[in-house]
Length: 91
Image (cartoon, rainbow, N blue to C red; front, side, top):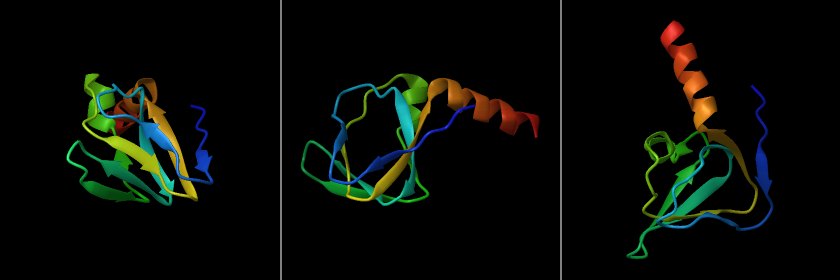
C-alpha cells in the first residue's frame, strides 16, 4: 500500500460543500477548517480524520474544507480504507 502525504504551505480549499469526496483525510500536522452553509467554522486538528463516512457511503459533504498553512494530510481512498478494515478484522 503506497501512502503519500500532501503538504500545504498556504490556505487551500480542498473540498466544496455538496461534492462527494473521493478520499478521506488523516491530518498528520496542522489543521483543517470546515465552514457550513450558515458560515459556522470548525477546526479539525492533527490526529483526526475527516470524510470517512462520506467516502465509505458515497455521500456529499455538507461543508467546505480549507487547509491552514503548514498542514500535512494523508489522503485515504476507498480501497485503502477497505484494506485497513480487513487488517483490523483479521487481528
